Image (cartoon, helix red, strand yellow):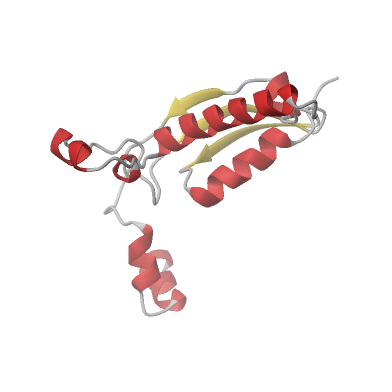
Length: 137
């Protein structure tokens, strides 16, 4: 059966976007087919360079946050979850992902025009109306 909706998802997968991706992949394969997952610059870097000296200082991966790493980690966790469910006699889930694995592409590492701004800029602005005036008008 052909899915009702075929989609291309273009995202900067931080926490909220990864949750949305999980929801899409857990949907019925009859409802959705994610054909392409494009990770692009947003409030999370596409690939963040971390100097070796900083990597040695931390046993945690907090310094390695990036779009690409988040997507790879998400697929790894989904694989582990599906294996655990199968081993414990539970439905594996993630029907849309099992039926059709999306191609993953890395997009722009920064804005194609204008200056680079991260979410911290918007969170510290005086008000949303101020941000709208600056960027939309």
